[in-house]
Amino acid sequence: MIRTLAAAFALILTTLPALAFDTRAGAAFVIDQTTGTVLLTKNADQPLPPASMSKLMTLYMAFEALGDGRLTLNEELPVSQHAMNYAGSTLFLKAGERVPVESLLRGIIVLSGNDACAVIAEALSPDGTEAGFARLMTQRAVKMGMTNSTFANSNGWPQAGHLMSMRDLALLANHIITDFPQYYPLFAEKEYLFDPTEASNRYNRNPLLGLGIGADGLKTGHTQEAGYGLVGSAVQGDRRIIFVLSGLATADARAEEAEAIVNWAFRQFAQRPLGKAGQRIAQADVWMGQSKSVGLTLEEDLTVLLPVLAGDEIPAEVVYTGPIKAPFEAGDKLAELVLKPEGLPETRVPLVAETSVAPAGFMAKVSTVALILLERLNRGPEEAPEAAS
Image (cartoon, rainbow, N blue to C red):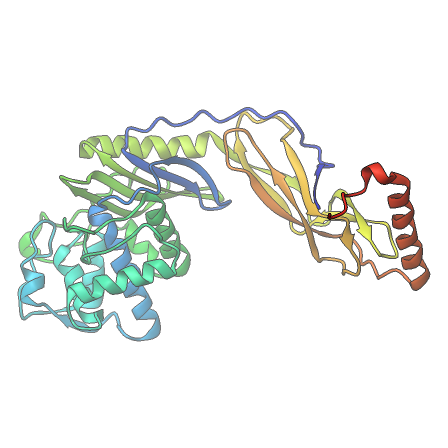
């Protein structure tokens, strides 16, 4: 039987919700990476044209190739006519020239080079084509849990079937930050001069870099169909947030909305320590054990992201399937503490056995069974289940 208990916690019943952020973006997703708390969703699982924000997938796969030796930073890759033919944001690459991988990566991150993406794609494609690499991108995305993403090219050039959701883009950003910390500082570069003859083509389009709000990535995007978008991240103190915006009308609107979201996420929420590892939260009944109950304790120190206006009490309950059958060992996961701060998703925290409980001896088991039979007899025939006719 699933049982719930009011948590023996100093935190029950009064929380003030955070003020919601009413974004102008057509779709948005904001998550506190440090705690995994989702702060904002708006059409977050709808597959939409991602424009250049989808270049993050090409970059992720390039970083993987660097990690397993399929690419090296100093290796020079050839530029095809197909890559050269791309318009929009480019490095002005020429067919037949060879470009170091490091230059291509910085050209994608800082300058949003469509042509540089195609060069990387053709090098890593199973059949040497960008389309082949796009199919590989889709397969890799599925394995990463990005269930609303399909790719038709490497750079987000408008093409039927090239779609990503805001949640998927945030997941991808989190993977880049977490899996490749050695390359992530590239996303904070405000300028990169690849071609001295094109000196004006050197500035990162991320409007938050240099504002002093902790922004250090990741990628802007814009097409007529997608509008203006941004996959961003910022860190302040011990917290990092990741956010994705899409469908804004102008570059100025994108800059204003992105800065406002960063300020809101850091100023309206704060981390709160709620308990220490080993702290008893509740007590659960035990079945067929040498003890009739067991304490349920926190497995680790508990820190939760809460609205800054939250009081000292939070709705909470302990959920477990019980009574819990012995034997089990101290530290075994037996239950969950479910915290339900108003205006935020619930947080589930594992609770573990405070002590080990051995199985009951033979006589204790006989006594328990006898008590159950006696209880059933005392219920009387009116409470017994109907016999089959």
